Length: 291
Image 1 (cartoon, one colour):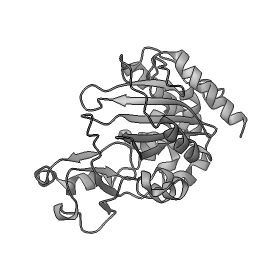
Image 2 (cartoon, helix red, strand yellow):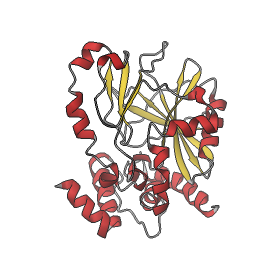
Image 3 (cartoon, helix red, strand yellow):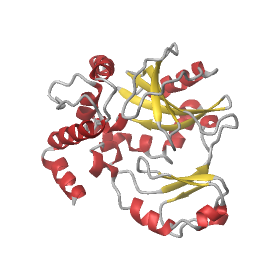
């Protein structure tokens, strides 16, 4: 029922839906509630809400399809940063245990989230892949969020090796915020499984002491030794876009590609304080002025 209501509002009054979703998320998870102004946006979230349903975004489908994007990444920065594909499935006979190796991760290529990790063959056998495929194949992410780049992406699933850092229990997730083709901030996510925290760094690796959606990580994250390489990759991938978040992993000094995100949190994630939302919004405004 909720999806049906969202689909109707997307057709007749998308900005009403976006403002409602934004206020709802800020009411539940934030301490800085405000009604988004999409006529004269100022904050990062307001710009994201205004831009995410633009018709131009339909041409971005191959950039957010987690399988199709690999060809684009290979062409732009080289195949060495890609996580190998074990199995890609978009219909027919479902993959079996002998088609993949373990540990591995299962991802829908047309959605955000819905990932599953299989550390052993027994984990895979205990999982109802048929039911999972039935669920995810019926979801069009555009109808949930209004992010138009997902509208025409065909449902599929992807198996990849589970990437693990031998020096840490869990990989750090580096999300590089790029405005007008230039990196400006690096969001670092930690302990996503048990105690998800995050913080933002600038390009000189100075901790900015703010977060979005999740609590601030109170410690200090060691600066990656190959940060310059990560920023170079992000800048190359960001060149065509007003805003994009380039998600990378750094595994024992090797940079690996995660995904590209054009609408961080779909424009709904509350920042630690309004001033940080506004600060990133200033960069968005500058990027739009220079298009």
